[in-house]
Length: 191
Image (cartoon, rainbow, N blue to C red; front, side, top):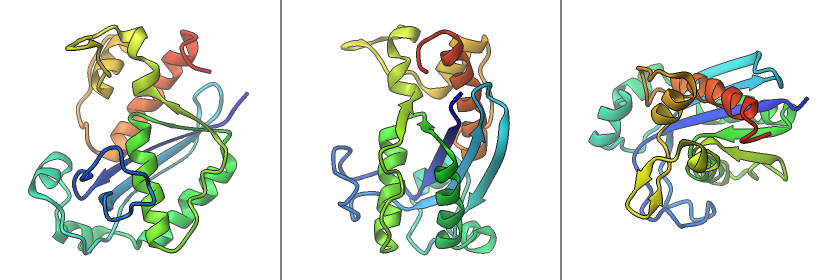
């Protein structure tokens, strides 16, 4: 059975262009919170971490309102980025599959942080699952051009019959993604 690393970020804001590659480090926002869970194939949590990150990059008012992390809180409660990236890299090594809801965003944001730090992103050729994109046909939520990408809360409600509170806290979002991943694996949507 595979081992999954489920992760989520909260950031200083949004990218200037959603289509930019991760190597365009000026395009991608900085991380203010990073959380992950390493889980086995039965969705049992083997390890879990959640860190606020110290950043001197200005946090937009809209982002701070969304996730509740202000510049002052980041500097007061945060851990140094490199310390957290080292721990995250160690978790990646233990995983067979990397998982996120809106993987394209989190993958590029994290990759940009590694590059800014002068490090090679550690993702390698790991299998990756985006619970958002892989569940479009499963959720069948109407959008302007066919089915839309489900939010994490919409996917959670479809799979588990209930929403959740605390969205946009990386630790909460990782836990909800773990629950959704278990449901998607059980339904044969992802493996």
